[in-house]
Amino acid sequence: MLTTGEIESNLPRLIERYPLDVDVSALIRAKVREKSSLSERDLAVHVARIGRLRAELDVAFERSSLPEEPTQGRDLDAFLFRLRRYGA
Image 1 (tube, rainbow, N blue to C red):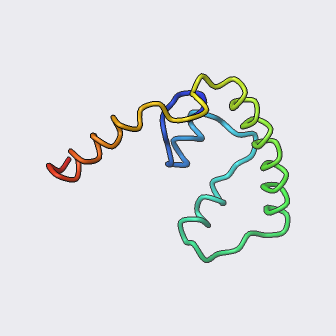
Image 2 (tube, rainbow, N blue to C red):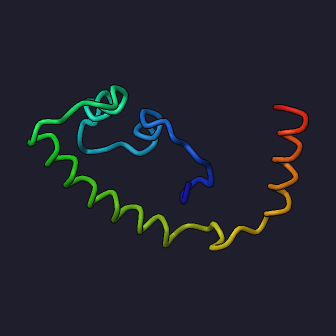
C-alpha cells in the first residue's frame, strides 16, 4: 500500500509484485490449512526474513507519498453509505 496506494491481501499476488529471496509456498500452504506446523529449519528461515521485510517496510514508509492522516473521510463515509444502501 505504501508504494502503490492499493491494498492487496492475496499473498501469491504480493509475491509476484515483490519477489522474495526465500520460497514461501510451504508457509502459504500452512496458512491455508490454518492449524499446521513448520519445521524448526523452515521457521528459522522465515523468522530471519521477517526482519529484512520490516526493514523494507520502513524504507517504503519513509518514501511513501501517502498522507500521515486520512484526508478524504467524508468521501469515504459517503461511499460506504451508498454501498450499504444500494449495494455493490
